Length: 192
Image (cartoon, rainbow, N blue to C red; front, side, top):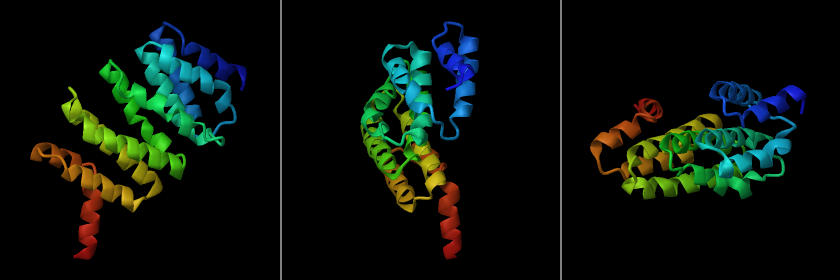
């Protein structure tokens, strides 16, 4: 890892929100493609999940999610529980940013896709009593849509649509369906 990149990782620990955010954005951009230095920072990012403030916890999950494509040892399969824990963070914005980034993990490999989908499907079923349950459900379905768009998995689409059908409130069922409307309309239009 070059010194500039290392400097940006150091800035993630800064109390200066502006410089921390700038470094995070730079690192997120770098990790859009596989990088060779993922394991040099992997444990440091895991530590942020446990010991960082709410901003650092969200940053840790988002960067680890982005690094999942740079994980030939498939460590993420063992570490996914730690990322999932932050999706239930006491600070809802931290939890939400963490949850929304999991699509990157789900596109890294078929095994990770299965794990992410299984865990988030269970979360979809369990979160109805949570304070922001409808937002969590929406975010989960959006994660599924982003995974689907990357891997073109018809079974995932059908799974998401089946989850939507379990929503009892028609208002929310309609809102959730909006995420998939274009794909359902295409399919219906192709039959007609």
